[in-house]
Image 1 (cartoon, rainbow, N blue to C red):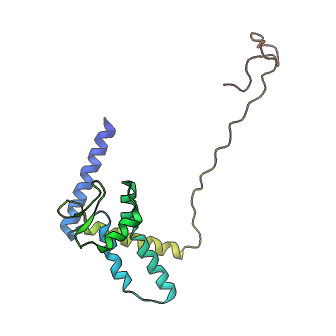
Image 2 (cartoon, helix red, strand yellow; image 1 turned 60 degrees about the vertical axis):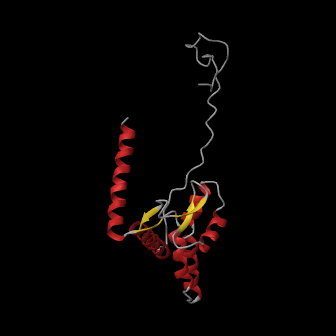
Image 3 (tube, rainbow, N blue to C red; image 1 turned 30 degrees about the vertical axis):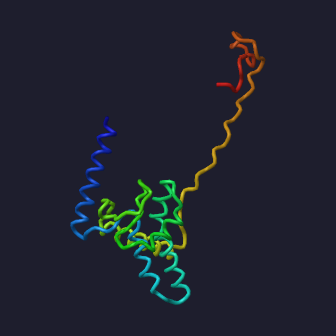
Amino acid sequence: TEVEMKEKKHRVEDALSATRAAVEEGVVAGGGVTLIRAQKSLDALKEADEIQIGINIVRKAMEEPLRNIVSNAGFDGSIICEQARTQGEKMGFNAASGEWVDMFEAGIIDPAKVTRSAVQNAASIAALLLTTETIVCDIPEKEAPAPAGAPGGMGGMGGMGGMGGMGGGMGGMY
């Protein structure tokens, strides 16, 4: 079908883009474990209170990709994140098998450029939100119950449609 063809085209385009990015900057262990490893560099930073709060927020946000991947696979994200910190540099959690594996040998890799860009873009958006005084967003409206409709007059008097108020039928039932 046309939808399937478009989906395949997008997958091929994504694969080509990922390959180009990998050639440009190399690859890192996938599945979110590289971001867990990057937390160590944040741990070394000791700043003033307000800046340290921001560092802690970034540190916590870096857990979310791994946490979401393993949670979607039915595992406890908090436990896996803690265990990931004690694993070797190349080791990560294979959510498909539920095992700790060498991510490079298992082929679970991400282009370094994609991971770096994701962190940079997230930081840029966060900085923008911090300097924004107002944010406009859509709040979904709760659906109002459907109106009951007007009463149908004298029910059971079908065939008398020409007589005002005596249209009969089931008023409000469509």
